[in-house]
Image (cartoon, rainbow, N blue to C red; front, side, top):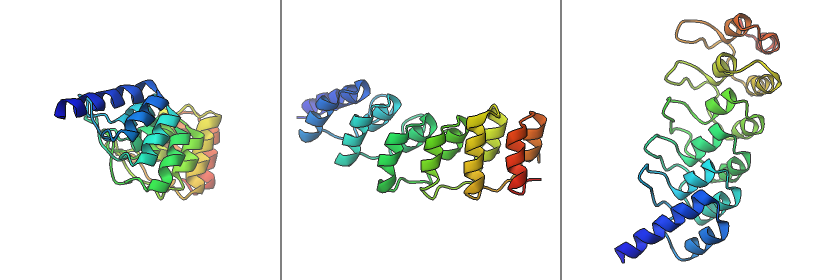
Length: 203
């Protein structure tokens, strides 16, 4: 029995990674472990998120897969969905109340990399979750600092900056060296982003 369970687990992991929704549904119905793990600690749901296999992810979530299961690299399905801009999957996860206290390998939450990569719709959804807008990661950066320091100042980064500022992000939380988001924006010639920060009370 143990060998058969292990084989089914492997089949589910492979089907989720490949995005084979019919096979995933069959294995779910057969009672396969929804939270089986591969050698890297990745679950079927995490693999579905990585491949942006929306139907597979939704089927796994509906069946009760753990959206907070952390892999060896500290990714969870929720954290990876935020970082990768998987808006449809994030929307399916929101009613399941993800654990917002789990951190990625940089000590960040789902919002920080979503902002850095300017995943506009994902950021919009994340802001409805009660996520900490002012969380500081291990680099000493908030989501707003990452928008400026790692962004390009273009329209999408302007949009996510406006979203988090309108949601109440503190415009004056400085980095480890005491440099504020506004100062970083000015140094980088990101005039539109700087204007948004100033409008929100940034100094």
